[in-house]
Length: 134
Image 1 (tube, rainbow, N blue to C red):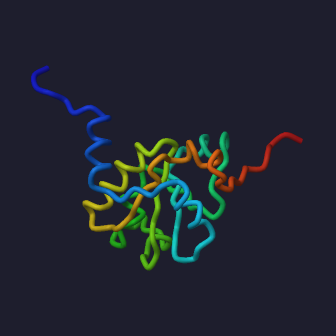
Image 2 (image 1 turned 180 degrees about the vertical axis):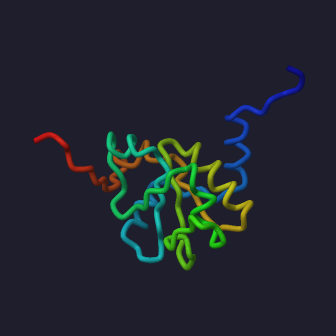
């Protein structure tokens, strides 16, 4: 194979250099605000395992471009605008790539710099899914 393949780390670094990054403490202060939508792009199993930010909207990463596009048959009203959108994953890598793509589409968004990894230890509220155990 000839040539250099860009690594995922390079792609994340390039994305982070051009998107708005929100610090965990600042995002914690945004929880519950009507003018902010925190969007969780983690896999549903990650949400089940470690909980999620109360009031966050779950959007699978593979559908984001279609969900934010008003011309797409998959458009979701949650992305109709008028709010600040803060996307997050576990560590900030997937969300940086996602927000860079959305920015390329003309959709304004930011991402949680450190992801959900430091959320709870920094005092962020966490909601847990009900257990299936009886």
